[in-house]
Image (cartoon, rainbow, N blue to C red; front, side):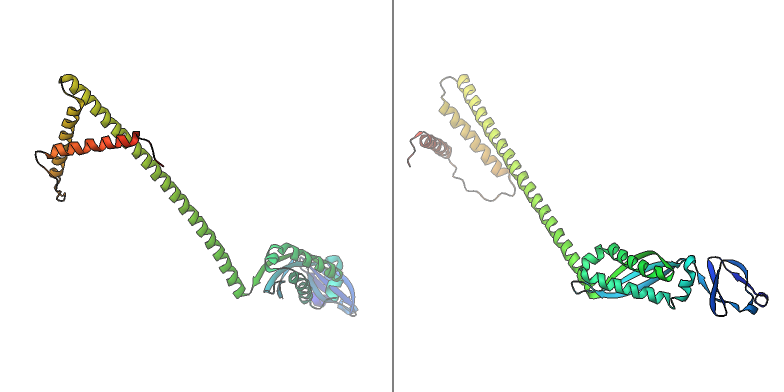
Length: 291
């Protein structure tokens, strides 16, 4: 009924293009308008002022001969003040934008290596946006924002890149493990050296205590029993040690058979051998050294 009376309703965020006898006449804003058809007026079409998005996939080659697919997202909208240009000058807006995106991407990416292309996505997006703004403004469109949302290398290249990264990380892990093992071995060696040093100190102190005890025993026995000499006391100490050793060997239930010469003269022979060895060592230590 409204069309019969010449009334036209234009929705919000939309403008209508009015023609008279086939020629552009006016731009109708949102609301209700009277378009008398009897005078040759009609609505040629509608133009949305909403923000629109176009995703463009462009395949190209990098400087190091790797084929990649660049995905660009273009956000654009028509300008109300240039509605006639946006409506009449382009027959396919999306195809026109896509052609410009292809041109810029295929001119920019081949100058970069694959790694540089990933790092310089913002530079690629900026180049595309500048070119689109310069070209589309004359057609009544505004480029709001351009985004490079993804760069997809070939599947084989992506797999090879992952393998290279995995190998590098495994090499780093191996180096770290080797360094940790080295530190463990060094600390273990330091601990063993410290343990042996302390054990040596203990043995030295033990021997010093034995020597001190023997000296005190010899002095006490010589003072308590007149007429005895230090040699008599040492013979008696050696005899005591000899019988203590025999007692310990006999007390061991799992000890192997040990053949020791034992008899009335065995103790005297042992004492003589120990005493002769001490005297020989003393004479060698005090004598002149021959080179």
